[in-house]
Amino acid sequence: MKQLFLLLAVITAFVLLSGAPAAAVSKKIAPVTFKKETYVYICDSKTAYAYHSRKDCSGLNRCTHGILKVTLSDAINIYKRKPCKICE
Image (tube, rainbow, N blue to C red; front, side, top):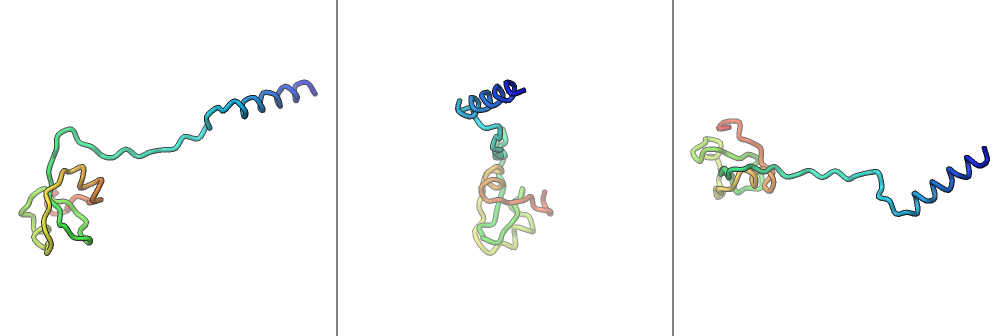
C-alpha cells in the first residue's frame, strides 16, 4: 500500500512538472461570416439597434443621422445590430 501511494505521488509530480497543458480550454466565439457579401443599411446613430435589408424601410426612414451601407457580417459583428422586424 505504501508503494502504491509513493508511485501515485511520483506520477502526479511528473505530470505537474512536465509542463503538460492544462485540461481547461478557453472557448472562443467565432464571428458570424457569410460566403457571399450581402449588404444591408444601418442608421449611423448610437441609439440605432437594427440593420435593414431595404433602404426604403419605414424603420430606416425614421433615422435622423446618416445611413450607412455595410456588409451583413459587419452589421452583426462590428455594429452589433439585430435584424429589423419590419423588413427582415
